[in-house]
Image (cartoon, rainbow, N blue to C red; front, side, top):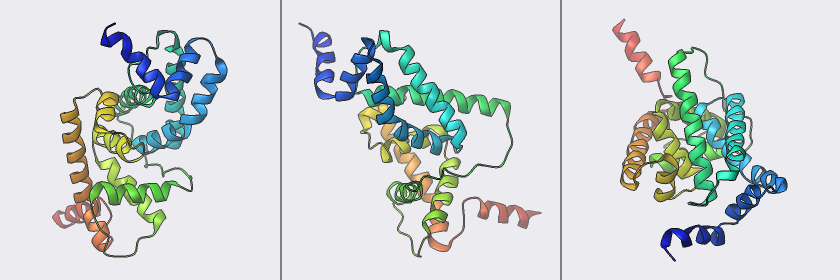
Length: 223
């Protein structure tokens, strides 16, 4: 028996969510509901911080699960279920961001969602991803807002890679699979994203200057 024939069974044995998806493929509606319950919060968290709009993130999450359901009869377990799910999420979010860019929509950025865990998660993301150690006391809600601004300044691929790394705890290999990149390219993408985040957040951690304020001040000086 070839490796390609035995590999799907190994994923089925190792990942209970793969087994659930195989039940979905067989027509088990309850298994699909269970997968939605397991992943909707995690998926919504990543999408919300990616697009910075709760309502849009909810729409995108619904689209992701709809695609999962539509693909059920073609499903073959070639990766962990979470990797497959976030591959779909990455494609859905990328399409949405490209469409938004083409329309050149202009508006005030929406605030992060009201989840009690969001400020702590974002604060941890800032410290872990940037490597910065703040020199002053930070208000959690303020830090969450500032880190969201910093994330928005990254390009979408860097943002997605960091979110998958920090919120989902994905390995380089899983992020590479989800974003359809090589492992080496993923490492480079994360490295650039962390460095960019560090540079953007350094003034805030050191003296309270928010992302964009220095650029705005420089522009005023020029005028």
